[in-house]
Image (tube, rainbow, N blue to C red; front, top):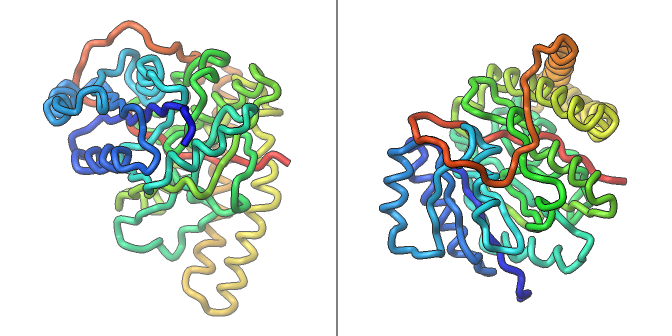
Length: 349
């Protein structure tokens, strides 16, 4: 085992996920490659902050409970965790996910290459209904924050990792800054995302020789609530993805911001439609639904992107800033941001 020290950041915002939060922390404490610490960052929810403080008051430095020191939202919460982290590697786990026992060990092995600055893993959906909806295409699993169909197996180089199952060298944040606020979720009802995409692209610019990887052996299991198994949420998330991509393109340029999406829409999605049509012809369940969902999802996301681009050009788009690491403590209050769903990661040729 290497001498690298891992700090794991878990951002939480609601007591409704109490059991999920405890399960997430428990999965980190059971790792075959132990973490130095788990940092629980609470997003402007005084009651949850106090309750978690009592729960882990005997854990010492192994589990530390912190208040989000920035504005409401996931990005600022992650930046708070980064600022407090004592490890050489900072890993992120969603508060409604559990990591398999070798999660950190797989991350650790990839960092033997000094060029590697970030490593992500494979996120498997755990459907509230007990099974994947027949119409829900695997090509769109990023809608529910999970690894989507289209990525090759093994350890592969990518443009960006997914924030709910990822790790970064601490020095990466010194070079590129923190997560941008105003792109991802911040308590708004729209299921926005892409803050990790923007950070990874910015990181690649700051460190031109940097390598970002996904290792499909680093597995977490992510809960998908019943409300996110619906066609309504599917459409809303696809629209929000388009809006978010417009913000990313505004920040880093359309060339970098959309290079992966071009491959995804020109190759991965047509292949998915073809599989759905074939399954329909063969009378297999859900074939037509999956093909239709892919076409709908792509069209809605494109519409969201055009809308977001138009708003930006008219000066009406959401403002954002490259998040500082840390910041002045903010007053605690009710509510909070919600964890972001993922977005396509893309393979670097």
